Length: 332
Image (cartoon, rainbow, N blue to C red; front, top):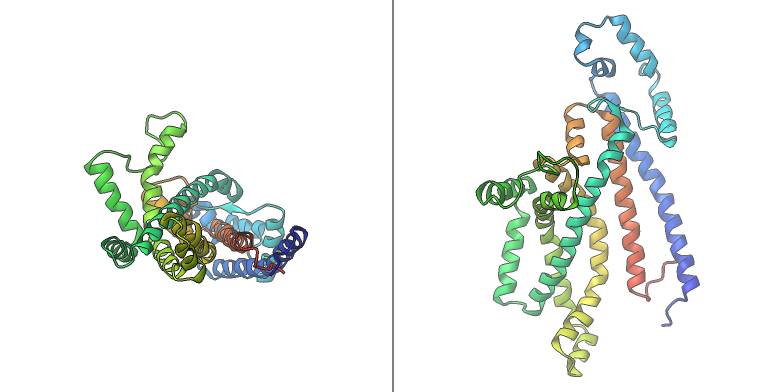
């Protein structure tokens, strides 16, 4: 079959992006509506929450004026449409737990979360491709059995427990790495070397907690690919084992692996929330936990929508990457 020409593939990519955008609109609308309904069903009084400790001494008239200014006594659909209108204008509301605009909270902290997730994902991909491929090549050997046993054991351990164990061993016991934070207490800025040193444990813990899925998937995919006809033919032609393994078997196994990366991203983001909380990192994870404990629904809604956007974008990137890796895939 002749591979699609470049203009046709570009047109197919635009069609896929358009269809995904049509799907993303109702998904994001349903997500925002669900978060709004949860906030409306909460027994927490927004006026008292905004006033804080002063709510105990503030008169009922002042609280009523706050409710009127915010429009919390309006019908629910009116409040939702007003919230959506503000959202489209870039106004995500006021964070009652941080006492600042939600946009400022996201702008100040989203970058650190993306750095943590990106570094952990890169480490997971490299390690899983290498270890899974070697385990498949030596299938049934001691390395394969040991790797699967470790993967199953790690998968059964909660990520926060892995984080606490890493702090106990490498920070408190051996003193090799800092126990938390983004920089040293005496630091006057965020130097690259200082930040990198503080991110070693969080990135390693997040990567370790997510690696079993990818390692086992690569191991099974490569083991299956080693039995394909084109791989057997390459081996019969006398090609070196490394070329057969990485140039033929692994290349075939990478195609479904791209889909796994896209679908598994929500769990990585969820694990980042716990890791940031354990290591006291200034990312979105810590403020999300703080917002949940303080019933800060504007901030919770914003972080939930941001996570949904990231997941939808990751799935789209996985589909486009799958098509780019295999010319036989027709995007149309």
